[in-house]
Image (cartoon, rainbow, N blue to C red; front, top):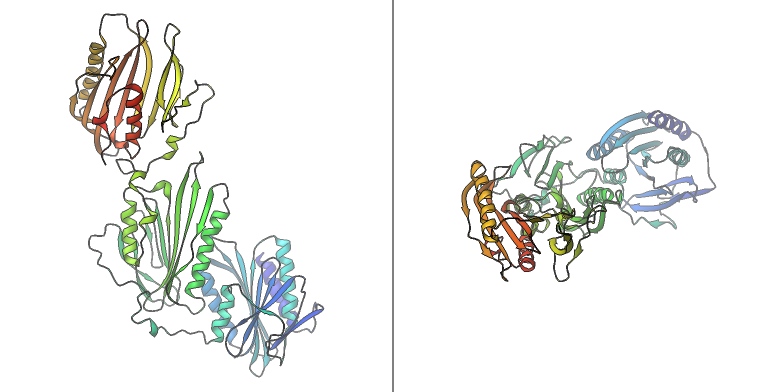
Length: 585
């Protein structure tokens, strides 16, 4: 592809010296220039650059753009403008495949440049720049952007650009005629041309006292995650102090900081001064990248909402927020947030930070990270964080997929129990063939395998089966014997279970069943965190010698805002009192 572009440029340079090369029937004349083009393939607009010049913009049906200006400039301007274009594209990606030819110092001489920019957030594209010396200080300048799509389509577009540029002539006509003003935002290379016509300089003295240029330095005392980081702009070599969350696993360099922990993805980098672009354009560009990522994966995302951009201070600081629901493999949706913030440091250097919050991975630390970032940039970010009901007792993210019950083909059917949030009803037989209705919370880890019924959700794990007794032991004695064995098992594992206790047997509200508990005040989890743990053993007399036995395992490590609902529903259907084991947040 690079060789084809280079060959194209040489061909254009040759055509620039020929009259009517590849001419078309239609000709535009105005804004100090004249050229031929095919109106069935190109639309023509104008954009005001300053009081003396207009930029003529052509847009191809495939989205490629060509901007042309006729102006009074020194022939040496071409090299300077092209360096500005390279600087802009280096902010957006990796520049390669450069080709150049320049003899503009001669009357009727021409210049031609090209390079390719590879980005991670949009299509690769070619930047082309052309100049033509008409003598007496009059020059023609043209900048083009071609996105890499189908090769045949791109080649046709290049050919048509070649014909337009080759037909360029000076015109005394300065008005723009019947064409309309461009309403779309200019691309970055059009901005380079416009800014060059305006001397390519901006004065930043007006930023003195600005509240939005960069937030006043905050005291970082007491901040756990955010630090002040000094970065160096790659073009101007100026230093800028910014604030960013930093961790052992984050990556930082002179030009950027990249952080991902607690569901927060944060990256910040410098983008030079605003000579060749401006904050609003950068905001639009980076937000388009966020939107494109969602649009490119329609099976993964749904319900995208892009808020209006917010102007913190005109010409200096803007931000925009987007939310979208992400679907996991079980089509459970969680909300993600993206915020693009473009600001300006006191020395005129622009910076961009992109904040993404992944709803699936937030935890109890997420809100503190967001709060610290918000304090540094005068933003309220806590709406993007985690509510208490989204967390387990240990601070990890609640997996809402655990509430998603799917009937398995090889298991006994479980049906929702009317009037309950989680409880379901199913059947199980004893050893004599008698059928009983049993109740169990319905979720992802619920199953009825015929002789064994189980569930595990929101810190509540349940195991139910039907057995037979052949002795003369009462339910109370049987329950006491079993719960003592569970207590002894915990005592033998004293490293993981501490501060043990055992309860007294309790009768169900109608006296037909007995239950009792053994507890550890401290159960040491795999990550070293310690929470109470309980085992509750329950027996219910059935027909003949058959009994229903149920063990409830309660690990408060996994307790969350939904735990008590599960416990309350168990109480109702099995006529128990589990209030001593409720989740107290």
